[in-house]
Image (tube, rainbow, N blue to C red; front, side):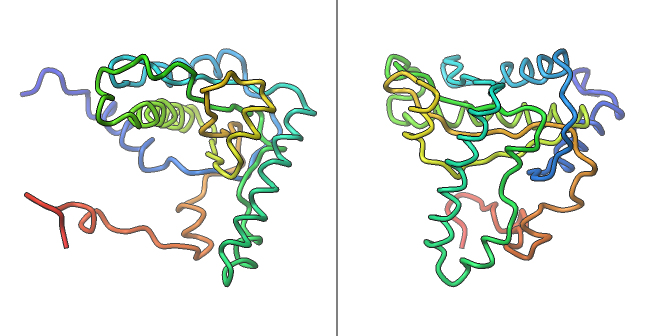
Length: 214
């Protein structure tokens, strides 16, 4: 008997949040209650990080004009991405890739400046700051799902342009735009799977033993 194990109901809730998390693109305009937003951000801030460096910064976008300018940055990159996809260009342009103008809350997640001071766990793997920040984003995502809110991770933007728009210090870097808010329903499967853009791979294709799998 493992005394540290959660109850069956608690374990079920954890696994349900993981299984039903979705990258959402469709939102309702209803606002997110301040105490709910704080609770979700606190869950993100409780993420593990290499050397306890906590390399995440959350910028809440509340100015409507700024939200519009961020949307334009994403739209610019969306068109450039479509061009790079060549034969799938038209198919890509039909996809809804963000909900920036509709979501109740818009957040930008960034890596801070002066990260080079944190050497613990990063001497040979400096990218662990990014990995740690991704853990915070995943915490936020799962907490949002448990609270009945949808979240979408948008990565279609030029980091330098977004950093300049948000007056970020030199050496810092935005890594994600997060659309957060109420939704009418959650997708039954990942949206890109529903749109026949790509099919997810099974776990068996990702696990090997004692060396790189074939």
